[in-house]
Structures are given as structure tokens and as C-alpha cells.
Image 1 (cartoon, helix red, strand yellow):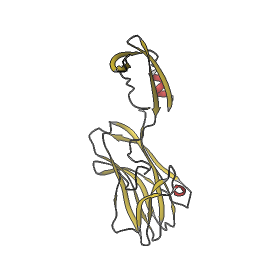
Image 2 (spheres, one colour):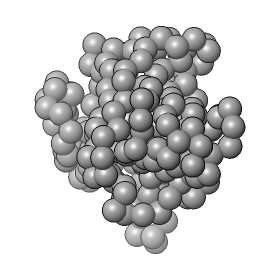
Image 3 (spheres, rainbow, N blue to C red):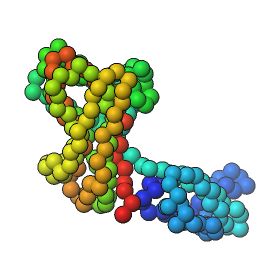
Length: 216
């Protein structure tokens, strides 16, 4: 799979299966590579044909809008792997929940509820990101928030550089918060997150956090 806004690099060698069922690396030449079409046609699948040691070679390429966030839909486990939380005081519930009816994608989501006032940050540091422009989005659903403050944000080297309000209205009403054109330079520390401060009894679901490249 290749990011639709990344570099397209096909392998220069493939494994040839010999008569004795062993494998040997051989050089390959690809014949019908249309890079412009692959980069400009959005997410799609392509079959690239080539020749390797006199035999036909086939490379199947999926161009996708790659998501750089680990465990983006909280499906990996119930421990919110890849994510960290911080809060001024303990909430009754602040965890990954396996409940399809309250999830936007899959069966799991990040859930919060407290009988006292709600306040927390949910964050993830993104590793090994290349320089470029990116967009960050996250989806939210919930209610009983009272007079609340909620926003998605991106931090670069510890400083918040972009925010956008997040919305909670009612059960099964999902809202996606997105802001575009985050400039990132390789080597900087980048963190994506969501901040929520709400009334006692507030509850909600967080799902589908996305960090995608933007074509420059």
C-alpha cells in the first residue's frame, strides 16, 4: 500500500520460484507505470506488469489515503495502545469500550463519563513522520455536556499550533472535527489530541482519529 501523496517506489528485485521450489532474487523491469495517474486519481488499485529473468512479473499496488495514527479507531485492544490520557481528577469512566452501537467504526471507541465534572486530554505522539503538510480529524458523539469546551488540537514541539472545536450533541449524532494544512518538519515532535471539559454527568464517544498527508 502506498500513500496517494507519497513517493511511488516499486521494487527493483522480485523473488523467482525455481524448479526445485527454492526462491532467488532477480532484477525486474516494470513496463506500464503511469505515476501521474496513480498519484492524481485518488484511492485506487493498480496492476503493474513487468519482466523478471524473462518471465512475467506482477505488482499489485493499492493507493490509499494513509493514516499515520496508531490504533486510530481503538480496535487494537482495550488498553488504548498508542494513546495517553491526562486529567486533573479521576473520572468514573475514561477508557476504551467495546460497544458497536456507540462506535462509528468497528466495535470499539474511547469512552468517557463521570458523575463529577469532566476534564481530560487524549493524546498521541506521531513517530517517524516525514516533512510536509497534513490534516488531522477526529469524530465525537455524546451528550449531557452542559456548558462545555471541547477541541481537537495539534502540538509541535510542545506548543499548540492548531485547534478546532469538537461537537457533542446527542446519542448517535457523530460530528467530525477537521483542520487542514498543518506544516510539519521532520525531526520535530508532533502530538495530536482532543481536550474535553464538561459538566457533571457528561458522557461521550471518541472514534476515527485521522492524520493524512495533503498534496502540496
